Amino acid sequence: MRRVTLLILVWLLVAICFSFSGIQAQAPATNNVVSDLERPILACERQIAGWRREEHTQIALIISVMVFGAIISALQKNRPAETDPKPSGVSWTKWTTIVLGIATTVITGITGIGSKVFTADYRTLRQTAFDGEALVNTLSVMAGQLKDGHLSQEDTVAVTGEYLQTLEKFHALGRKMYEPASASSAADAQKMDSGFSLLPPVYAQSATPAWVQNPPADKTSLYFVGQATDTSLSNAKQNSLNDAFHRAAVALKEQAPRASDADLLKIVQASAVVQDSTFRYAGGSYTYYTLLRVSREIQGIGIRSLPRR
Image (cartoon, rainbow, N blue to C red; front, top):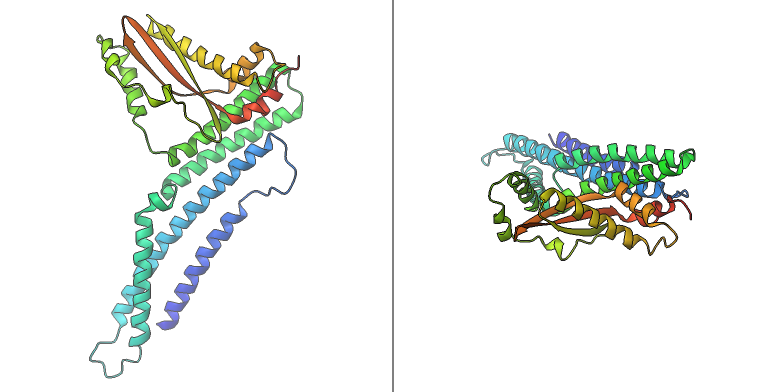
């Protein structure tokens, strides 16, 4: 029984080490010189490798608890009775049970507070990594098209905008796990339903989101808030979006002083993602706010795709 226990423990340790070494091997090599289009893709691949690593770690811990529990049960079943005149195996059986019991408790505690130790549970990590890999494949295809050099200037701007928008979609995957779910989604749904309400003045009583005055800030994206007021809700919404586009184009003008306003606006419209929106009703008019999100890569990849004047 002692040999069987030791063999199981060794197998478990080897399995855990193999899962770590296997996921480490998935990390892309970064020693070679890469282009500006490949650099964000490599960063995404490293992020996916990290999600896979966490997923495999959680699965290994769950398997460990199951195996340890089975071993403890087997040891308890085969443990000599206290009245046994020859308790030669009591010492190693007892201490093995204690050690495995402590390990099981610790691992169970870690998995129980997984939200504080890991980014998310292994199911979410697996699905996010799967979705991320699909986006990375799309990015690779578009990067190949842009590096091919056969696209027209107009198509280059369009594909670059789509590339940056896809990159933002990847970053959004991470935000869903790293940031707690906010009440904005429920609020957005309520606003959608209430767009057909006969009592629009209720919006004058709703709280304005914090991002209206203080847009978010992070290392991967730029945020711009557009605002417009109109007696028509649809007009206010569209004008608010246009205002956000305009503000983003003005901000990019510092990095591309020679680019035309029309070209800057074109790349912003092609690459931007609407992060959030809200509106209020007061005095017979709607005031609409739009939060626009654009990849920071637009300051490099996006601007370089514009025609030179």
